[in-house]
Length: 424
Image 1 (spheres, rainbow, N blue to C red):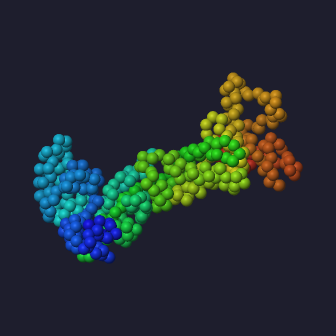
Image 2 (image 1 turned 60 degrees about the vertical axis):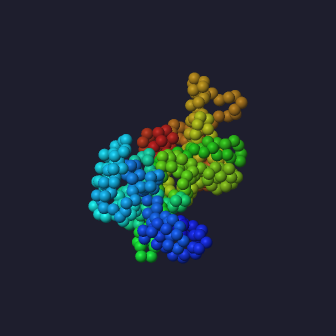
Image 3 (image 1 turned 90 degrees about the vertical axis):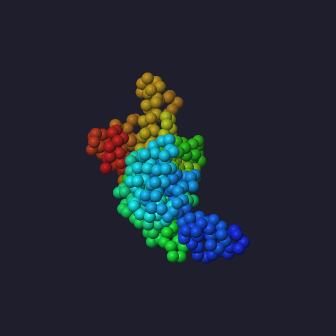
């Protein structure tokens, strides 16, 4: 086969010299290379039908079909329908439906080759309805003809992806006619049209994404330098900002049915595991690490809530040290509350301190998380149960009341420890 039709570096025939430009070959109707006589791939190689009955695609010999297809070209519409009627007569299932579909969708004109028919039956590629939990769709032909309309619904983006999985061109909502100008990267990686011919195929497929907010959970067992692995759980709300960058990050590893939890694990899981395994002095912390990983993959994190998972789960001290003060206070409050509930459930009542456990601090007022309180004068951390700074002796900021339930809450805490409502 010739250089451009077969996609080879050069023709394997000894008498066929490599050509710097595309030969006409089957694009001009010839079935063999005019230079060496080898069989050619036609200009419409790779085209198939989406949404048509399988019998119609088989009748035409579209991509994915093992049938050689109708070959009586040039042919009129009536000739094609007559041949289809004869072909479908031997079908065991729904021959009438297949013929009706072809009769409805095939324009009334003459067709020069199989590509003419396939293009006429594929006037547009339209993004499907994406309703949660479905947020991605790559269903469609693996090759697109020049001039096809790409219709991207409102709230979606589309990315043209090569056969190898590389992202090429992106499109926002609206109708786009695929040409060399509108899809330059896809065109650069596809067979060029031969001199004097304008028909060719983009060797690419369209992947559609919803731009609406998605929610998911990232669960990681983070191995810290000071102890055993600690389970970390983060609830994340995100959306897609850069579909090309995201497609490059997940490159062919993600199916259309994959839940958002799988996406978060692929994108942010490895980065979080590396950050938690770093020495205690590393400035990275859980939320920041997740946010950076998502943004690097073209995602926009709108909300990240970090906590521990499972009964008895806890964070190693060096992991807690890397959390922001407000986040650390929330995590510690949740862990202590979980421990109190487990002890109460096991003993049939409130837990009693062990005689050897040492002095026990008095309980914090209702709604006040037991996390540290920063002194407004020297910024030193103080227990939530004291009124004066242990570093400089200045009075600590008084507790403020939750606007939802009225419970007291320390300054610097974003959420009420009693009802969970935002404090500020």
